[in-house]
Length: 213
Image (cartoon, rainbow, N blue to C red; front, side, top):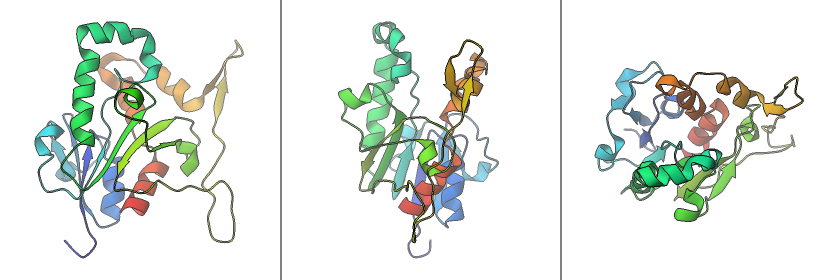
């Protein structure tokens, strides 16, 4: 590797959105997921349990652990998930990622129980902070990494990245974020909805590569 280049592990990322962004910056980045990649670069993908690869000599890990059993949007099922062990299993997967033997660490998840079970996130962002017209509160737990910067307005030095997000208003009068409404129309079979909702938005992927890479 050249000077300044890093080995970067993108954990639980089959889409390769962030992996590609880091590759474009010259880093040796690999996505890792139990699913085959859909980003078009199988040579940059490790199809395996990421916990088996935490000691493979990485400079940075950015992890996107499954949130189905952790996010507050599924709060009405928490009691059942605690009883049947699904929530405990999700927590046991999350913790080795944030405690990985890697210098620079970022773990992403929606607002959920990890804010109380582990600790409050270092930063909460939305895709529309970085140019994608979507409202989706996203928590980041960071170690040895700076907060992601974003700007509300144009000025002499900074290009505007904050944009208004789009809504869909139903005939009932209910208002939904367009992204949430469109992904709600996707079948839950085979994990298709979860897969669509877990993909990192381009603006955030670009910001991670530019600011952390």
